[in-house]
Image (tube, rainbow, N blue to C red; front, side):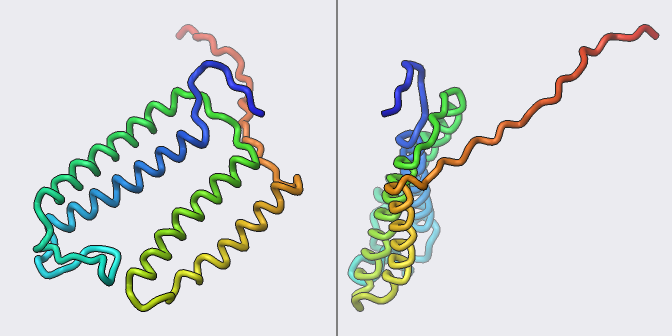
Length: 169
């Protein structure tokens, strides 16, 4: 169990919030801009039944996506700036595994949903899931067998300089 002091820290939760807000905000902003500037006949969506023509989408959705995207991106920028003053927690092998598994589940859920939404069944999702799942299984094996190590931070050694004295001219 890791003990921390009362001071403000940033660990995996901080990192996850930054990434989640950044991805969702970026996607919302891009979709809002596509709706605003895209041709009326173009479509936006996952594919199949989950697509809509840009001309049929209400302008309220466009403004909501634009404003929401800007707010989330501004929140991420604030977190990045505020995170500099927080003490970074050292990564642990189990925390790295949980982070890896979380990203695996989120990305593959999106890929599988998109693959099924296209309407033709299973086409390509397994090409990403199987090799990544093998890599995740190897990662978990190393963590549970005790072979996983966290990379040691590189500390730059500063050369001690002699104090400089002012020379008269």
